[in-house]
Amino acid sequence: MPRSREKSSKDGKSVPQKGEISAAEMAQRLAMTPQAIGLWCKRPGAPVRVDGTRVWVADGPFQRWREKELVAQALKDLAPGVSLEEARTRKALAEAEIIEIEVAKKRGEIITIEDSTSALGVVLDRVTTLVRGFPSRLAHLGEIVEEAAEAEAELIIAELSEFSEDVLPVCGDERPAEAPV
Image (cartoon, rainbow, N blue to C red):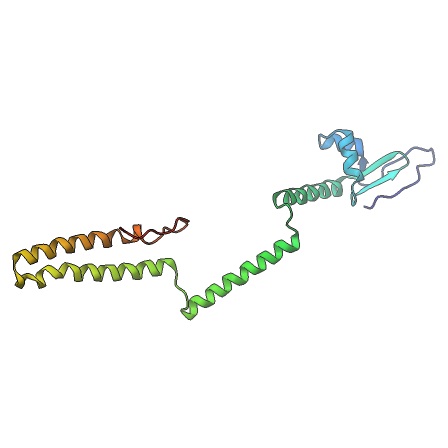
């Protein structure tokens, strides 16, 4: 209901129209001061009617309008400097990026962290198996060589078991990976 100036009744008193209440009554319903409701009534788009010195408020529409205004203000406070159009653009770009990633996955151009971790695990298991076989393959060179190869194999296996902790960064960890010493 747009703000308008209406004439008073024949006896000079201002009367509410259907669905209207006085601004003072609205202030009581919303537990607000008359000054606060007055500020709300002066805002652009407020569903009020000015009749002489009285302000009449469209009961239901005013409360819905005020709730929308409060939500809009809260959203503006949460994301200062970001317009609705900018937020929509960001959303569209993010959705496009997600689609590009899915297409790249289907083409086999990228793999997930889980897949790469699994593949690396298979490789490390195979290397560990090969390293464990060194001492027995060198046994024909003598017991001292076999024992030395066994000790070296255990060191290599220990290094491989710590490989993911020392070399591969943990997801979300911003520290650069350090090479084992």
